[in-house]
Length: 117
Image (cartoon, rainbow, N blue to C red; front, side, top):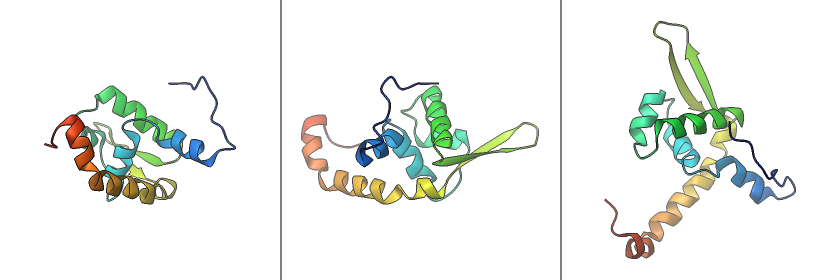
């Protein structure tokens, strides 16, 4: 598990919030979980650009931070699913604002990176 070399600055609310969603995929995972619980394979299909190892690590961190829950069903073969918690749900307005900003400013980045697929 990744261990921070520099501790989170607890006196800065912005840095504290960013420490929870600072990776490339955590905000995308939370966005995918907003409407329903998903199995790991469903998340891998929804985010194919992310490697399975990275997604699994990000999911583990989201659970450790209390933003998502993992339920393991006692059956053979074992099945698990992830769901967003109320704490994770409280970040959705921030994610919605980021999505809206990205949509409004897409043209700026299309010039730099090319058109969206």
